[in-house]
Image (cartoon, rainbow, N blue to C red; front, side, top):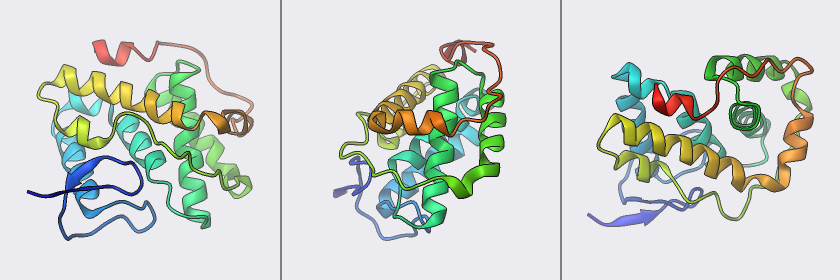
Length: 177
């Protein structure tokens, strides 16, 4: 099967016709592959343990355009990645902070996407063959995606709510669970 590079994340995906997300710009093959990864995660609690990181990583690698919905989506997913990766919050607590920040989403501004979205894409995650490999690579994907946006980290941190939760578990613990 022929492959095509996704114009957003840069990953190589099957060249197919099909649907794409309404505001997260991707190739149809990339969107379909993301759906396969989500299906795997929904099918097993161990895979699901990294689900939020999967969604965040995909969302920030496919930022869309300067419309309000895209701006808010990317900002909230970057906030959750920040809370998980920099503040070591467990997924549920990072999600709580993201939801709190969402109350102020009308104040978020467009962040120019980085020219390179990171070393790992959902194409890489889709190729994993074990739960441990999947969880480990999703965590690496999240770090890679977050690092790609490094020029905007200060802005993203300024969007964090005053009450950011407490440090409970390290990000690495999700891989061991």
